[in-house]
Image (tube, rainbow, N blue to C red):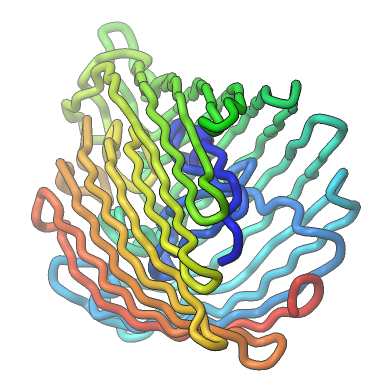
Length: 439
């Protein structure tokens, strides 16, 4: 667990969810539940979302084998159990130093599904490359990442029903202008596409610009003021206007103020508030999705977001993390113009002898504005309540092998009810690493 690091509050979100209010502690990882889903992390530490970053000189290679049984593997109203086995090999190579480091990282594996009627398997690959730099008073990253895998998200209407490909590339940098003042800026482009014959209605393309100032205000902590502009294109949805038929899209503008403060090495509190404005290219309510005309709410929407974190280090062996946020975004998993989500998470981490134990819970309440019917959302969704509970114990077996056991319980209460599900799972994860950082 160790000493807490100062948290940096950031509006940079997951690449395909622009301007999500989000906590971003640079060095702290918070357990989030089952390790084999693609749900967004509780907190993100990537300079450029979706890019691995420089982890040091040299080569590392690792292999892993994750196996899991779920009482409702395909996440349906009527439970449909099954096993999923995920073998994977990963590699990471770095050249240079912390002042100027070049990195390439990638992984390849497969989701193998046994005993399930609806859920098929698929390949899983991820590669990223770039340059991290730290020159004089400035540091930053230029990078790109490409990922392709089954859609294994608990907020998707059909878990694992289609292959998804996402590409992201961008630049982020920050400079210290004085002892108390810093400035940061970034630009990123992301494209998310659904494959394997899936509907294009959920494809999302985003170009985001971010910038901000940080100010150390002494005993009061670190103050940050930031803003972003994201141009979001939805090429799989057509909007019918009086004069033409155009691709759907909108511009999102965000302004955020945050404050973080560490109280010694045992307590960190960070919080932020934001105003998020979403302006559609046209406010026509008639769209065409998968060849079907339908009326949806595409009006301008302005709302408030927040993000907060409290980290306790109670001893050298025990820590507790609390996280909360409210976001407004669109994503390639849900048939809706905008998703307004309120999320909360708590986790506890402890060391018991040679073993690490983590337990916690995540909750997310989502409401959908401008929801529509598509191939994977036959009935427009109005709201979801997602609940995840987990416990995990793991440790080393020898110098190179790690093993962990985990159990989780996931429940989604949806409107309409047909999209609700409950699932309980248990898994065994094994991994072996060679090269830098493997001991």
